[in-house]
Length: 100
Image (cartoon, rainbow, N blue to C red):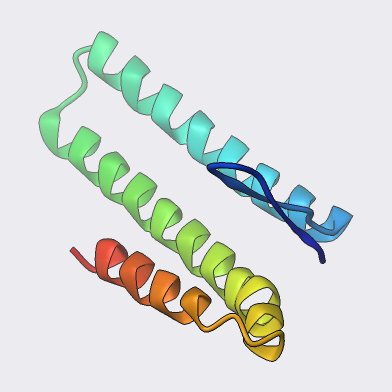
């Protein structure tokens, strides 16, 4: 898992399994959001919409957990082994943003 660094952003090469898992999760979330839009268009009851929005939030949180775990196991661990301590600072800032 090599990380490429450009002038102002980073990229991450993912295994086929990781890529497919993330894309499948996002596709399901996208479908859920489209379903919520259709519920609004069809004048569905507010509580029913709110429950579906809650389900999307849970799915996004689950996506974040998987992505964060993969990031720590690969990018962060590799950078720490290579002596790049600034990666830990970056991780702390990211976690602070996620916990707002």
